[in-house]
Image (tube, rainbow, N blue to C red; front, side, top):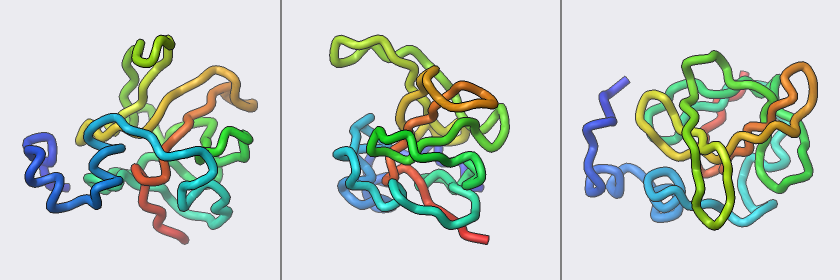
Length: 131
């Protein structure tokens, strides 16, 4: 993988669509039920749209009813970083790609077993590689 942590905004704008840039690099979000992967059922691996790091296995994807692709676990413990997010008057846990820092979405503790977690992710932050 290329060391994309060193990319500046101009380089990201060349690589990403305007919507992907707004979501991945400026911590935006897509409207609920609008993302390409919201209803996706294919087997495969979801990679970071920015740097192509593997993030989630489709086997951990489930329908949370939230309007965003949701997973009960990341592909491994080092794929996703977590940090506190107090924007918009809420207390949440933001999730980012551990390799390039792309904003993915948020982590909640209302998911299904076996983890009880819900990684709520913007489709624009992901690229599915089907099996």
